[in-house]
Image (cartoon, rainbow, N blue to C red; front, side, top):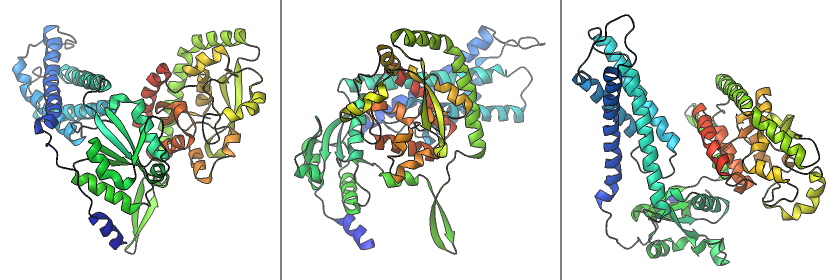
Length: 499
């Protein structure tokens, strides 16, 4: 094994011809801009808080005389909080240029940093016990709110401006995908759907596809995998994504070795096996290392917290959307014959069946007509979907575009048969067609939305949906649920990938 790895790493591969080195300023300028903006806005938050507290005199002290305090008295706390904030940002990697990072991730780091900073400030105030009236408690709350709001808005502005530039062809990184299988196509599909990420896809390298001269849509197969040096030099590649099976050890190592020596960024897409393992834990038995799979976090107290969040949010949304539901009910009844509510037999956690409710979006004879339309199915696996399904009513098309037909599922959430976030609830007939490894998605409660909903919806293949479900199961957290819920609203309003 060691000889194989050694040979793979040391295989001579011609490096890309030397290019003009990238200017250091081009790399540091965005970082310096972010750093300067964060420092300036963190200090501005204190100034604004001082203005609100002492000039506008909001929240005057109860039962005591208002005391004016010079702004200079807050210089120490201001510098301390700013320093802690920047340190946390560096720790969380907020100044590393990662194009796939979400805005909500940045907001989470901003909240974390500000909590650390102001918690330290509170502790120091308690220990030092400054003279009563010199420091106001409002000067803890107001600057904290200011820091969170101003820095979050600043990051959103920078992100929006960067996406605007990239959509106009500026600041793009030329991307090459090694491997034209399921994962390679998934990468290319996501890059094409999100131009704001700033990638210019060049095409694929794949041995089989190159031998067959098989292109994929507008993306060309540029050569075999061993043609990487030639293609990278000719196409001026900035980043390589390796999406080939993990058993191709030598090819992967040779590719990564070339990229490292040629100043080309590279990333590796895990295969299905690695995703099904999720997080592993290492133990030992009398000195013998053992690797096991870490249990899902969706147990015990975590499950209770998730359930409480489901009930509260689902109940509130049910009440808020009640007028809309009444309007949809009337439109469905007037638009076509049949009931307005459609109960479907779905498979829940651990294979338990339950009745899932949806607003009826199809004509009554939809199931009888499915057999004659089976040949027109546009998705793989056990699913059946058509972009222009003739069985869908006019009202149904509108509801499906914005996922309004799923509003009654909030009642399933309240009853505990579904969760707000989780894998899609499958039909019994779909489960019968599952491969053995795919049944693991039934290990948790199905969800009203999920990673599949915010990552392409109906445009994803079935295997891609399953891989996203596995990722969710192994990496669950309250924060992940909140992120998915916040990303669901724009995904639904845009109607992208829905049919």
